[in-house]
Image (cartoon, rainbow, N blue to C red; front, side, top):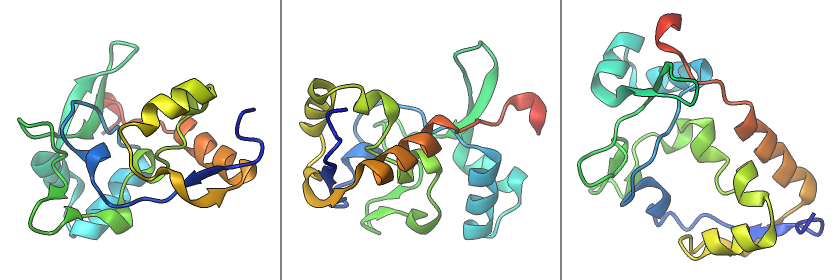
Length: 148
């Protein structure tokens, strides 16, 4: 693998991965539980305030965070300087940028690094750490509408 000797990454809290372009942050049951505890809301209250149902790859409906009309994540707070739930953010967010598709090859990694000032800078993550993060990302099971 191109990252056998590790990769540099340190989040600069620029929030570019949370804003400015469309995307989906899929929520697992564990993510939802953690976020509900963080905000001290019931599942129904959290879903009503912060979530939406979207079509998934298998044509089912799954739960994900809302985004605003400018594509900012619903949890991103300009006045607060970033994520309102940074300490309880979903696995998809906390494993960035070590997503399996971004680790496919060096060209993909370098292309993604153009949009992230923390990639290729900061501390070196070992191959084992990178693969552990990638495995967490790959194991995300979004909540399907019929599961709630």
